[in-house]
Image: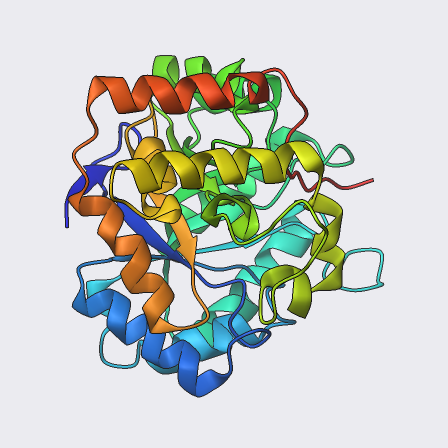
Amino acid sequence: MNYRRLGSSGLKVSELGLGTNAFGKRADEKTSIRIIEHALDHGINFIDTANIYAGTESERMIGQALAGKRHNVVLATKAGLVKGSGPNERGSSRYHLQQELDNSLKRLQTDYVDLYQIHTFDPHTPLDETLRALDDMVSAGKVRYIGASNYAAWEMMKALGISGLKGYVRYISAQVSYSLADRTPERELVPLCLDQGVGIIPYFPLAGGILTGKYSQDNRVPSGSRADTDPNFQRFLEDHNIKLGNQVSQLAAEHGHSASALSLVWLIHRPAVSTVIVGATKTQQLDDNLKSLDIKMDDSLARSLDEISERFVHGKPFATYRLD
């Protein structure tokens, strides 16, 4: 396993990180803990979760799995998306963030989070309030680094500007949908992150499984797939996405790789990317994704992937999560 700095910080994270959105939902507790242990055994040190994943079960299961192993992990969680029906159960106000951080720490069975991320931009709370609250959390020792997720480039730059002006701790990472099926971050966010020393953490790197080639254009949904277990995901099964998945599969087969491994290694080598989050509902999936680290990406293969996915630079984002 190779390790990279997260942005311009001194924090080192594994090239592949473990996404835990499925824990407590599509993977039960026993399986989830086994996946975490398997990831750690193979050198993955970055684990990403959020206060709303599977209700709160993802954080709770991670806390169970990391008992006695916390010091080996760069643990990241988030807050800011809708947590409940109350007026203060969403957004990035000081009130909500402090409440959610304390609750996350209890579930994770730890007294600090390595990376605390704002889950999405909050148009109803002044950025100064959010950033000051995060700065206080770092000063209190509850948080070591901060990041943002689902921020537009201008929102990220505004936040960095305020932090610089006020002397607050600054965002070191940007978590965003990024893959061969979603290259929209390359228009504005990637250049910004390169200029400002912010590390990109892609989510949906396999477009929810579409880039594995498991979906076909005859609208059949494979048993056990994400679209099968989560019917809401079927909205992503558009023809242009499925066509790309088939093209990647064909290219991968020609070079003796799996489509998922080829998609991941392409993303790992994109500018500004620090770690790529991969989810898993079984250890075999994690093993398949780890094979991406053994692929030597040559210029010809990289160009082929760039060419078949070029239209996704100027398309719409594959996924984004925003507050109303």
